[in-house]
Length: 67
Image 1 (cartoon, rainbow, N blue to C red):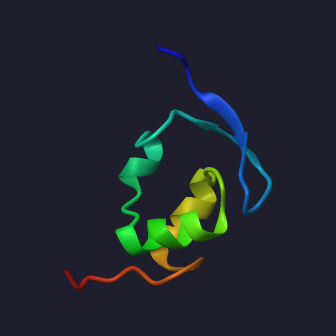
Image 2 (tube, rainbow, N blue to C red; image 1 turned 90 degrees about the vertical axis):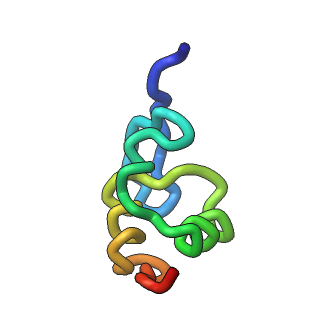
C-alpha cells in the first residue's frame, strides 16, 4: 500500500497530502451535489481548507438538509 501523495489544490494552489478516495476528505460532510460541483470544475482534489469551504457552502453550492 502506498502512502499519501503530495498534491496542489486546484482552487487555492496550496500543497497538501491526499490519501486517496475517501481519506480525510470523507469526514467533511460533502454532499453528492457538492461533489458534482467540484467534479465539474476541477480535475483533481482540493485541500482540506477549500473542501471545508465547500462543505459549509462558503465555496460552491450550499449544502442541503433536504433528503
